[in-house]
Length: 166
Ligand code: IDP
Ligand code: MG
Image (cartoon, rainbow, N blue to C red; front, top):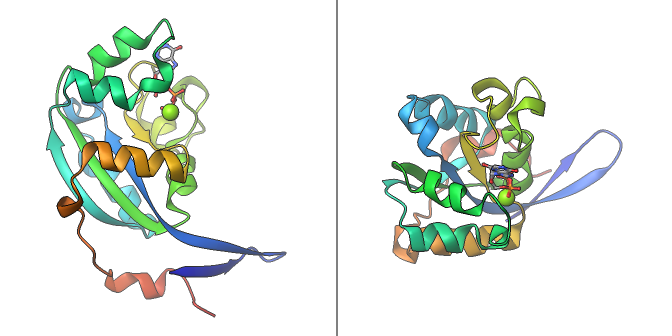
């Protein structure tokens, strides 16, 4: 579905997208699942898949493959596999960039207040949430965390009141 939204000065096409979101071990342990899920619901996105899971070292290394050569790669994999994560797929118009915006900057020290990281985190290593950085990354990451039959197709009743078709 392609929806069109007006910014007031120009029209931008907002393609319906899916994005992978992980509520990281720090946020699960701190009881922040509800807080973070509620933000995506309030914004007008809808979930296509949600599961609590223990990430394996293999999945962690594949998920963060782009950072393989970075000095923090080992500790990043250790952290994401240290305790359960809540893995989710969220859908909606422009969902990839929208979720990235809601997450805030990678380093919570410079994440704007009002963003998830800016409100809930302090440390770069424990920054509470992951979101895919492009539609292409999203497709790869969704396939890494979810089987096709775990993705549920549905239309939320609220969708018609989030984005006008005209
Ligand atoms: P992103 O999560 O905002 O996409 P990336 O640059 O893709 O940020 O980094 C992946 C994750 O690796 C970050 O969320 C953060 O937890 C961790 N990370 C990034 N840079 C550093 C660093 O310099 N030291 C330790 N951890 C880092
Ligand atoms: Mg990233």
